[in-house]
Image (cartoon, rainbow, N blue to C red; front, side, top):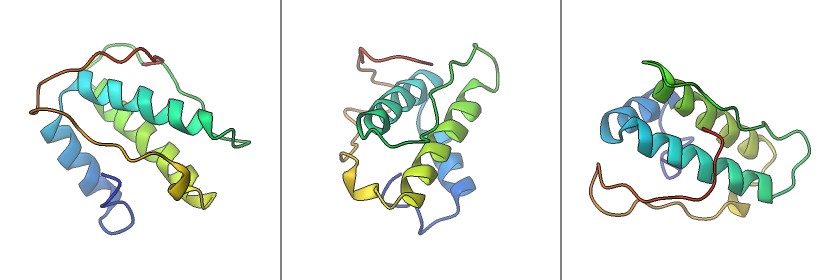
Amino acid sequence: MMTKYGKMPVDNIKAVMATFYDGGEIADAKDVVFKSVNDLKVNGAPRCVSRRKSDDKAKLDLDDIMGVVNFVDEQQMMESLPVFVTGGQPGARATIEVGCS
């Protein structure tokens, strides 16, 4: 996603992510991205919002991810974020000990 940010419309990026990843993986990614942004200690950074399980949760989590990425981009701090990668095949889950989803 980060390699496509700024080169592809955000709605297209979200559509690809929603197709490729399931809701749990998107929620895990949201937790990691928000923790990474929080670690930057940037004033005014969006807070991670917990979402209730619903049919729209994955879409809302993707909106949250793209919102915080946009914020970091506006602060010209994209290079300060770690490189995010996926592991395994789609559907393979890793447990992440960070949370707000």
